[in-house]
Amino acid sequence: MGMGGVIRDWAGMWRGGFSRGALHGDALRAELLALEEGLLFCWEGGFRKVTCECDCLGAVTVFHDRPTDRDYLHKHYDVIRRVQQMLARDWIVYVSHIPRDINSVAHTLANWGVRNLGYNVFWRSPPDFILLQLGKDSMS
Image (tube, rainbow, N blue to C red; front, side, top):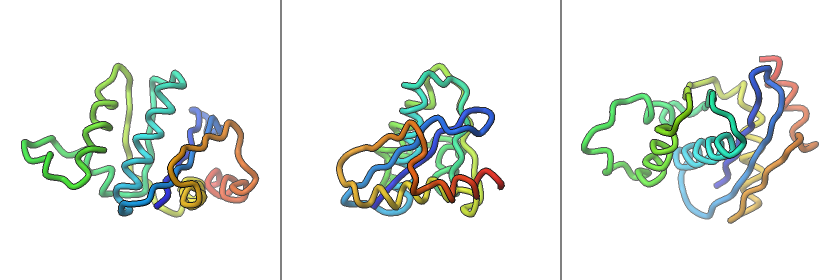
């Protein structure tokens, strides 16, 4: 399974991108891990007003629903709890759902991550293999 994401500033300009691969998990876990990784990069980069856009409605819904005393039963509770702790930090974070067809950069980075199991890759400038998708997403 691979995960990836892109970090942009308020004007939509590239600030960074990341990919990672893991041996086990499903699509929801990959989306949650990408959200966690993206938030971590934003926090460490000093961003304090962040909008996270995700095309997985299940991942977005997890953070919009009110917490219950049964949350610990979710099969991805470990990741959900870590993201909840990050969201509780002293910053403003909006998590919103977007259509998959305008999120092709993140998917290309995630597909690249499948080949890189066990470690994170961070790009300060866009790698050549996503330039086409970067242009496509920016027109959406």
